[in-house]
Image (tube, rainbow, N blue to C red; front, side, top):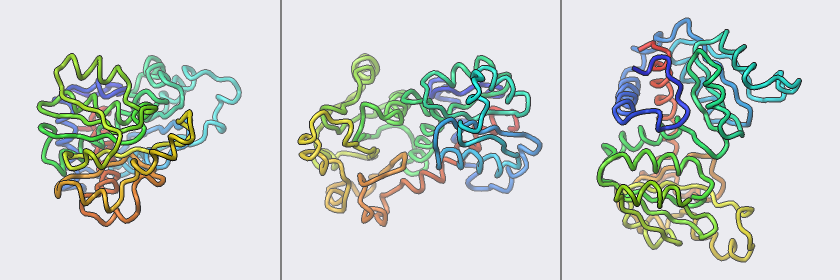
Amino acid sequence: MLKGRHVIEPANLSVSEIDEICSLAEQMIVDPKSFQDVCRGKILATLFFEPSTRTRLSFEAAMLHLGGTVEGFADANVTSGTKGETLADTIRVVSSYVDVIAMRTPKEGAALLASQYSPVPVINAGDGGHSHPTQTLTDLLTIRALQGGFEGHTIGFCGDLKFGRTVHSLTQAMSRYKNNKFIFISPEELKVPEYITEDLLKPAGIKFECAEKLEDVIGDLDILYMTRVQKERFFNEQDYIRLKESYILNHEKMKLAKKDMIVLHPLPRVNEIAPEVDSDPRAAYFKQVKYGMYARMALIAKVTGAL
């Protein structure tokens, strides 16, 4: 039972619970009218202490599609935090008004702290570089819908793998399923942390490899997960200039890929996916946005006890 549960990181959800959420989301996609009143009378608080477009609007749209209502803020400067109110007190107050809280903050661990003071479910909508569980649910639902399931895939992560919380979370989630292989494509400066490769994948006997150029491995992939490579992450500007073209997905690189590969991206993108790729049927990142709303609808319905 997910009713009343906090969701702070993907590991809070078992494999069977993820399957349950994805199955409910798929029902909502097929027959949205059957779910348009399930959260009637319930209120979602969106507490966004840092800027967000997709995640905040996706949560709000999800609750509205379920028949509930939304209150909250998208700018920490309009809160009593500017007067010195602690997060614990803010949560105590807000939880008195609502049935579920979605919170984003730049401070790692803040969502966990909030859950310790909230009598209503807290859903972590991103806490610094730590975790973003509903993005992981979004990614999983997209993979299940477009690739038929979670097992037997070769998954490539490309770009900033050191600081990308979405990469870390999805790797952890997909490592729980059988026969998946991971290929990490990045410059040395932005390679995936050792706690993923040495502490998670190696002990479990899960296959993985690292590469520096996307074109060298794109033909092996079933799923390509793109992220931004930011110039400021490099110690040496010459290294950035030398490598930056390796991490731009364009029409020429897509020619090397499988016909049924899908391209995912947590968005926002800057220049790491050329606009010419958008018309390729394998480009799934805007479909991914829509799946994200349904994943959040299913999660909200479950944690509030509406379904």
